[in-house]
Image (cartoon, rainbow, N blue to C red):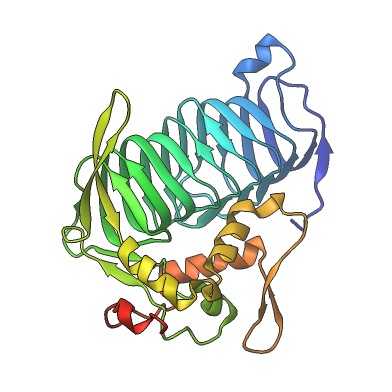
Length: 323
């Protein structure tokens, strides 16, 4: 954030911030401050954690460097614009909502709330909630709901939910996902798995390996009933997996795709003590694994700007066995 911000010290019940730098976060110091409402109008940096009854972000630029917890709601206005960064985990006893079309909030860690509804968001961690609704978003980790999830045009790591409905184009980064009820989908929906995509080469702008590609999944064909049994509990799940193809591909030196480095750097983000790289790009320059580059890269995949080749042919294990 390049603008000069006015430093303020918090000593009021309700707080309105615009063009401010808050040192030390916003934490209640007495009982009356537990019901505090924090409103960010625009251009604000909070250097620390926030605990509030309710938090509203009317517009960017905004950055909160500490963890955020709200008793009721964390809400980004639907007409918000600009960048919003939550550098650490975000939690709410009620809801986390950001459905602005002209704003791209970035969550550098996990989200945990009763309900989560996001549009155009980037989540470097996972989402834990009762109900999850995502649209045009990227979640590097998993989507873990105790009730339901609705996913539209997203790139996600994986999911484990009781029920899920998908629409548009949904792309998974990990080989397997689970649901208790059979997945439902809107006609025309496409489901892809990127476990064998050469994301490392694509990130550097290099030609993708001929052995790589995204795999189109058929919700009916690639649905495997899996029974998990414990001492006193037996649970049946629907497993949506390409693990057989991934196991075969392990014979093709899967490590050279560098996907795990890319996803780990995205998930760890601010926790890394240094910036790593994947080597040189097409111009011979070092391509760093920084948060900005990774976020933009996955949104390029989401929009189709970064085109991943389709996996062609079938796996024949005998072709890879060395005599």
